Length: 236
Ligand SMILES: C[S@@+](CC[C@H](N)C(=O)[O-])C[C@H]1O[C@@H](n2cnc3c(N)ncnc32)[C@H](O)[C@@H]1O
Image 1 (cartoon, rainbow, N blue to C red):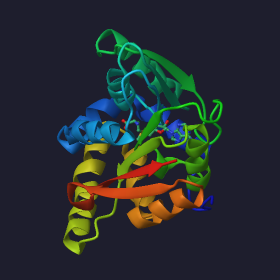
Image 2: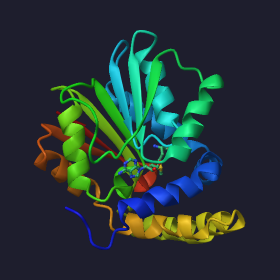
Image 3: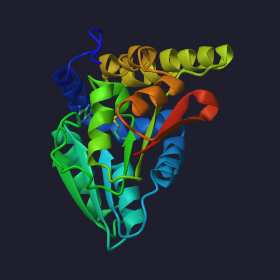
Image 4: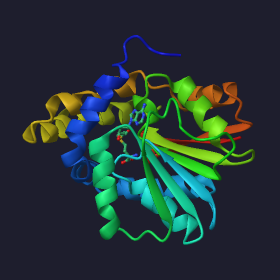
């Protein structure tokens, strides 16, 4: 299911390596800190419990990974995967300041080819990653493969609102707030990439169908923030 209009994996990897120094600051600024609440919701939806083995895909600077580590506690284990070495270095450096009772392993890898055995995780999250992968079906297939039967992944990402006025607001926000803010940091090309990536991203119900197609028993997409965000919860 690769899309010819999508940038290739190397382009995306270079882009995120360049964004790395400003990534956290931008998330807080542009979501008014709300992304932290949405990430907590995703961790709850992943169903990960104390003592479990948790996986955070496209972990970036590690927000979700650290939340998963807190959820699994001292007896659990957490793995964060990303192909941006720069963002992984930032994630690892946070261990001195971010509470993490569980052992965290950072793995530099492509989420389309996960270096893990099948049926080996008790739950997973992916924050703002699925929109960026070259092949959404392959990515969902890999997540399905590594999850244990009955376990779930919570995939948080942007979404195009169903209501026209909300969609107009989202477009206005991207053009007039996000892009100018990025321009001030010399990152205009990197953040201009958000609007086209959102335009070609499958809507919630299509995401549910894609998850079911790769084998997930159950897939529900929840709308967040008036439909400007969403979380696909798929159970193996
Ligand atoms: C928008 S960031 C999200 C980071 C983090 N999950 C968060 O919510 O703050 C997207 C991340 O996906 C990673 N990524 C995109 N495609 C990937 C792939 N095929 N394999 C591994 N990482 C990928 C990028 O390097 C980047 O760190």
